[in-house]
Length: 221
Image (cartoon, rainbow, N blue to C red; front, top):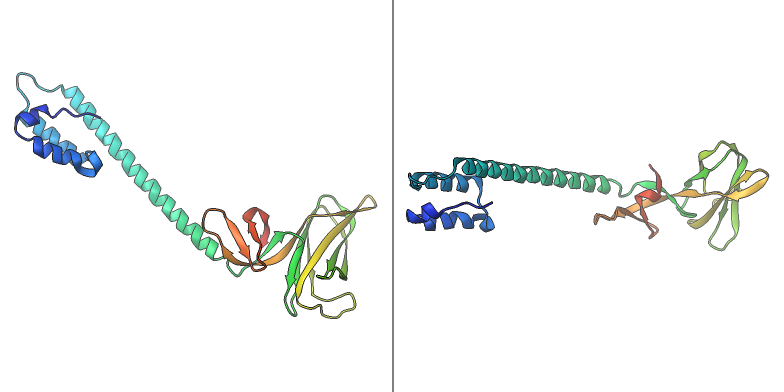
């Protein structure tokens, strides 16, 4: 937007106008504009007055610009508030347990492991096989019939012979019987959140060293 200050220069007010024009990195705010407009009206040539319609147009444009600046400031305030809310929500995840896609989970001493399986169709029987770090099967859990959808299970940490399994990392495999054939199914296993990335990646750092995204999480508890 341009503003003719030739009449102000003729009145010896060029310095005042230039100072106002330099404010805010060369931009005029509403107060500066009104001051220059008043000065121009006071010192304009009566025989050649400024076009009032152009002055009104300039005033209207200045009002629109100020309104846009105010709206931008309001949006930024809202964005900052939303970011602060996300940080607070993310920090509340630390120490929580989640079910994440995968086939490995850590068993704490005397603890248990929760899991979930996605069954694509109704099955007459499904089972979960637990294997230790040496590849030895320590537990086979027959879960029975189940409709399609999510099916939850809990390994109590005990072997098939009833003894307590040692703390450590274990591998889980879920299989469902469909039309007389066993099919391996997608599984989610319990893990604990150690920290959360706040750099926009939306990733959780798990205590076992893995990094997973929110899309990999099936449940929070």
